[in-house]
Length: 400
Image 1 (cartoon, rainbow, N blue to C red):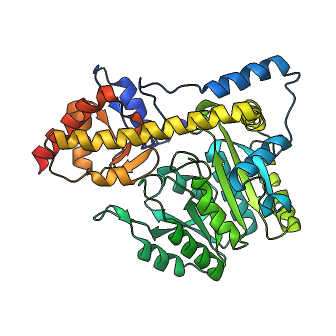
Image 2 (tube, one colour):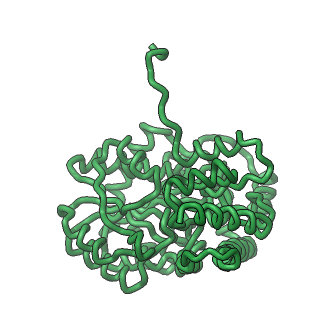
């Protein structure tokens, strides 16, 4: 039977990484996959994580299964990180958290929950959004719809179009919102715009599904939660999908969380019972190690302070690469204005490069960028910056 099957197309991001690995050219540069790189081009293990793992190795006494929703202390620490320890949601127990296999696992469980409990409801997503969002929710059987978001001409948020698009969403539909560091554009709503989004969500009775994959990579751990907390201030019920791949560097540990917020504690408990039913039918219970690391770091004042410093250092390096990228392009005589790159946040930016230019960078210069023109700024280093910018200058000169 299998010989009759057509080959599935490669993933547009992970497939790009495979092509990069197979490229024999010595000066190749990968700006595709969303993985943080340090100044030496490596994806490091954080020192706070190493310290936590050492403690866990010494203290671990069992490899028994975790509960369906993971360790209770993990959920408690995740909620404190999302809302703040003194937030009324935390004090009133209006939220419950499940430890999931990565942020993608959280999104899939959210999709399963929506399909199971609200089968007629659609999910509205920004144009553009992370390439895999549509795959995940469609695989769960959820209907997806597009909403305007990014103005490619002005390189900014098309906020009026976004609001108009959400106004057309039927009452009770879900809306996928990026809490910070929008992937792939790097463009986020400002505080006043978050207030307007929250008011619309409340007025239209929409259910936010908040993808929070990059807390700490925008303006700071607390600052990046501002949009989420603005939504929460309206009393909205929502699903929050967290990832600890980036801010803890736990990529291959697959550590994420799905937090459900209810209007009351009883409402949260009812919803969470169905979340657990979805998990039981999928992966049954989560892997332990990544969640134990997060709980250990967030639960120890010294380790937490060390971790916060490491997150700040990663954020500062990314922002430094943004500035250096723009300055190096200018020094190379590129007339196109790339200054918008310095106003964007997080690991990603829409470069404005078209598919032909992206293909030329790959074929002629061994520089790998997603076909949409999204670049992973964290893949830039001082060492590869001049090579990168020289190639972009050459490609732009040919296609001008």
